[in-house]
Length: 317
Image 1 (cartoon, helix red, strand yellow):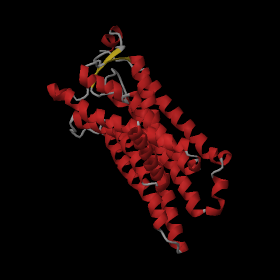
Image 2: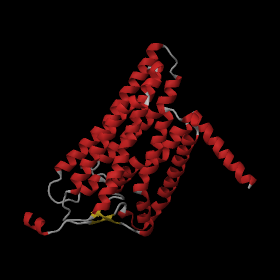
Image 3: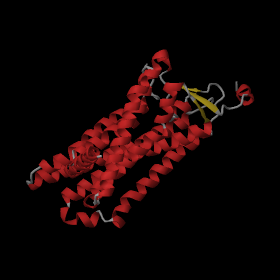
Image 4: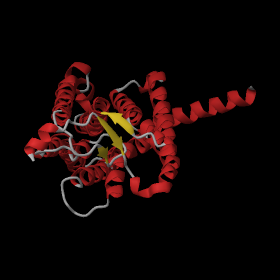
């Protein structure tokens, strides 16, 4: 067997074959995913425009929301257009190099979705628990101490995961049962042992999203304890924090299901596994701008004002 593996060259071209069991119904998936893509592009672009154009929104909380909108805008661009073309025109091919580049940016930007939630939790902690020192704590030089280590962590861990995947030999199959180059979907095609890749991928899940969510949970426990012990009204804390908690819970559930479905032999249908892998990246990109934008009074007012002005200009024209 080892001699056979040495004589067979490693595949350098792959076929993305997600939802292949749908057969003739596969092109129908173009409709819901294209609608979600348009919603993601429009909502996040509008949110970024509002925050950038309004000087009154140039504060730490809104800058972090803009950062989330930028990540949510960028992430789908690395895999959704290719996925939609695959549904509509059956274009499924991708090179190994293109696959690894796509994998790196998809997983890197996906990692920053949870990391930005962590930075938002820190912002709420400083604003509610230490209001007198909020501007001092959120000053750029001081806040960078929380930002830079996590940026380095995300870049390094994702780079290690992708590099290890790129060193594998793919001498048996070149059909990826997914709609984009997800890490474990590619690793499953390798010949030889992939135990290290599986272990490193699992460790990355606990070092990035799980670790982030543990710190987020801890910060909110401290926030609510501080509000209750001080006797202050918890309405403001609930309004600013409940959205984070809901997003955190839903995102963590989808992430764990998506990642663990590749490592636990539970008979989960391939289409369901692919769906969860897509949604843990795509769902936040569509609904985060609604959750963080519409529920924030200042942003909501500017959005309504902007849309009203656009409607008025069209009417005049």
